[in-house]
Amino acid sequence: YALDLKSNRKCFESNYCDYDDNFRLVREKGNKNGDPNSQIYLLRDKFQFYRYLHDNHIPTPKVIAFIKNGKIYDCNLNSISLDYLKKYDSFFVKDNNGECGSYVKKIKSKNELNELLNLKGEYICQLPVNQEPYLCKLNQNSINTIRMVTIRNSCGEVAVLSAVLRVGTNK
Image (tube, rainbow, N blue to C red):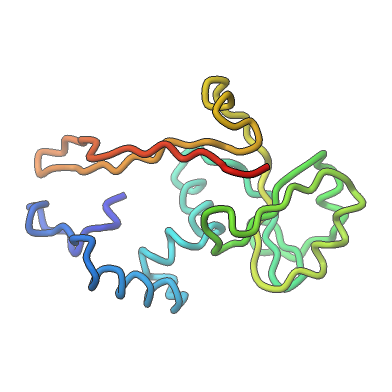
């Protein structure tokens, strides 16, 4: 998405932000300010990132609801009732700004739905995904992912700079 570029200039080499102490300070400031024009905000806010991907027809796990301080909304931020979620057999509730699985809860029964009304903060409700069988063998209790860092040069070619396999540690 070129969210690490300083501007729209053609030459990538003079445009790239190195990951140093200053970059981390700027990133953390952006994480806290909630500025909807911030590229950091887009990456940190799971709901906004989902909407961005969905609107650009990029496949992503489906978000079925957004929760803010116990109030439930659809993806267009229209208020909905708890009954709307009863049609799903199971789904995950995730802290909207969490990372590394800081708050992820699987809702497996209708009896657990009332807990959602007591949540403080922002959360997304997301449908489960099925991972590839070979990744499932590593840990069947989590979604194991391969994260790739890519770069696009001035000729428009994309190259993989690095890749990391992320595997869950807990049930």
